[in-house]
Image 1 (spheres, rainbow, N blue to C red):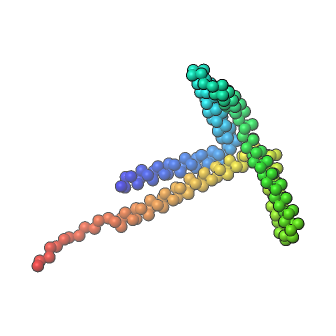
Image 2 (cartoon, helix red, strand yellow):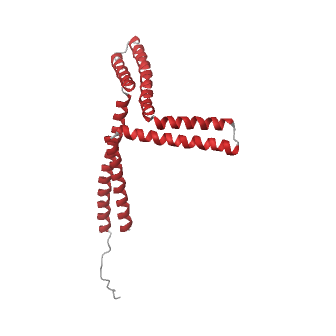
Image 3 (cartoon, one colour):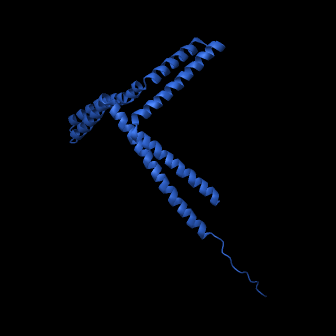
Length: 193
């Protein structure tokens, strides 16, 4: 049992150290990491497209199969060649969503004012902040993405450090509990009747 717990603890420490290392990489090189992820995605799409096209050529599958294969293939090549263009789209899409929500928020703040709410100015301010976030996402998409990836890296580093701390203290508690359960040597005397 002790050997099993020791192996489990070593595996947990190793996993935590890998998590910390990944987090550090994300903090140090956020844009490079997202570029690599996009290239991997592009390569997967190229392979999928090639499989569809190969299936059409070898088995005579329908025209939709070859069309889908060509689309996957072209999209994969485009993503692989220009990963930064794909990476930049994510914050822009989020920014547009935030702007649309902020417009609805402004409308609701206006309705609250018409209905005599005393807190309409707070609602208006919240909508304004939401709108500002949307504009920042659209205008500085690389900066927003870089910050988001760094926050993810910080979360991974924290997760790794906290796992090491938790595993260490759990192992200590298990060791103490095991020591309390050690058999006690006693002498047995037969009682005479």
